[in-house]
Image (cartoon, rainbow, N blue to C red; front, side, top):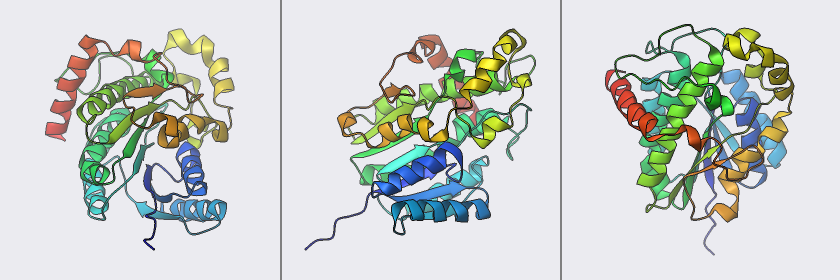
Length: 290
């Protein structure tokens, strides 16, 4: 008898929070999962948790700092050389109160929420195509609604003060543009592309946020934000897991799933023709210089 090939998945930012919970859920369903993260000790702990949940060795940890585009490209080269891939979950990203820069000198929200998953996915396409039917799941965010949708080709960031929610929303909006472009480009290849909004959750990243993450007009909403980020991570995994595995999505692509795992147009209204054109030019310029 011919052995059944295991379904293979890569989850970036998979050592904690939504990424780890996604890896656990996939392993329980029988997937072999590669967890990507920066910290080796956290990686070992993540693999132990995934394997324990699956009841069998189901995970491995591969260290990489995905804030570095050179390291991102090197990781993709290594993984692509291993052969077909059936699922890529681009969970890496975050929202930070204080502005910081990647090793390439790029503001972190842009680097980790947009450029890194962009570069990684593009480099992983040979493996995903070889594994078709396969899926790409990009984690998006309702922070898009707080974005300042300004994308000047000459600059990474818009002028003015830095507010973490607006910065992350702007980067996530840019990546949603890329997600839709990629879905359209790959529609005849067997590679489906989805965006999944997990909603707010009690992640380690969320625990570090302060009210300064909000633009001043939004600060009266801080108590609502705190209530949102008290949501258990186990609940927030519903949307990415649906996008990754739900058979009702077979043959479909270019959908955005809301926190309940339901296809939704709520965030698509922000993807105007003007934003799309500006994001494409802005991204090309950033990648050409990074």
